[in-house]
Length: 145
Image (cartoon, rainbow, N blue to C red):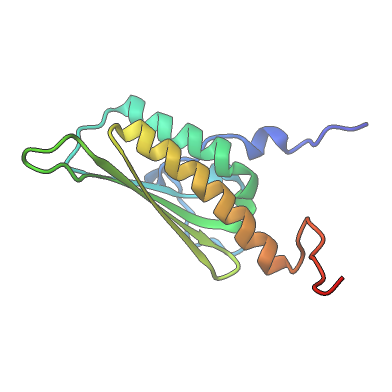
């Protein structure tokens, strides 16, 4: 049984958008060539947090990198003046099939909001691509039988 030779490339981390020189390249790109834009509003982030986002986005969505044009991650502080801390993570995935997947999740910590959003985005991208390809893994039920 042979191993998939592209498995290491599929699970590599997405680079930040500023490091991708050929963003307007026509055709499919691997994970290392797909731009990832990280925008943070009202929060302080360091390089460790940005590296965490790039690495985990590559791990969760790297298997779909050939179908992803761009990936946007927005973290925003939604805390009220007297309420408990709340961070909202918005993930926007632009697919080559012409579709968009937008996921919004909230949590008390930025990492938790990002992890929740990535789990939902992975399932949503998989479902969207399966619908566009015209097949489903499960056999459709037939009514009346």
